[in-house]
Image (cartoon, rainbow, N blue to C red; front, side):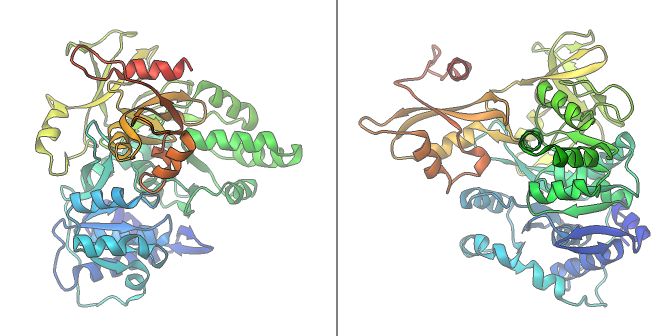
Length: 501
């Protein structure tokens, strides 16, 4: 078995159930065997993938985990693709990561066939790879923790997403911190319906559960009816979701009959832990959920580059609107705009993080990587304040990052896409406070003279070019934008315009 602890532990869990997927339960032993077959197929007779970037477009399932682990066990870098991404978004990731091989399910094959021809990478069917017998003569490489393991694409302050590279050591540190802080155990059972090109689903749910010998029930997407039915059956002990999902669940409670509400509430009450993350949870949502289910949601803070950094306690006060204290192994400091470290409570500053969970680099962006650190501390770009021992997030240093429905979205990327609309002359995108989405994507546009733009038409046009969560939910057509003396658009003023109606 590999030198990576995650795989060694999986071998120790043996015949215990690991993944429940499409009505079939797969053991840890079966997962280890399937991932070895994937690794063997990818190696193709070579002794090591040598950190080749291997992409895969696979919904949440046993197949997803087997492929991800197979890439890792072969010595490659896993590059999971978003199943909701549009072709231009997929093309950017595939080209930027210099993908030579990608795996896809038969159902999603059409999404990558044209890109494979255009970009020149080999396309493999995951279904066929998993059904191929492993060549017993091929041995898998022994991996060290310093090996690069994964590349997740996240939006930054540039117009295109950046590849965040983490090592096996980074991932292991992220897992260990959460297993300790959240009390993961072998008898835990958790649903997995979060996107699997984000750290929330990959590390917080999937990797922590499999490290612990727990059972994961994988869904290809959030299917509220099926999940509520399983909650009613008390199938889960742990539940993790983004605020938008909790808002949808609250609405389901409000629309259901009293007997159905009580059955759901009983199922949620029976869980030992419920967590909300990836976006700020409105205090009203937090309190409503407690009233409906008796559960005090645990809020935490993290990002792709650091894993999870802070968390409310498993045992102790879970304070609405706060993200708690640093997790085990995480060093945190607040720094003022002037660069001074803040020691007093009540003074806001930028969160800076240091520790073994922090990522290795931005792919092929050495200058951007260097600029992201100061004295060994990663600059998160998030502002926070310490209040009575608990940290509270105040927002982004940059208005160009929008947190909507658990996704972190680049306003600049959306602007770049919308500028291609034939009726748009100029565009500025901001995030505005929204009860359901946390922040809603809002676009202010200056139209081409004589052209008409409405929200429905813009959303329809964008649906083939942007993921659903990136499409503007609000639109303002203006004659011109507020600008500073240098002619730069003043986005805070545009944001205020939307907030003021």
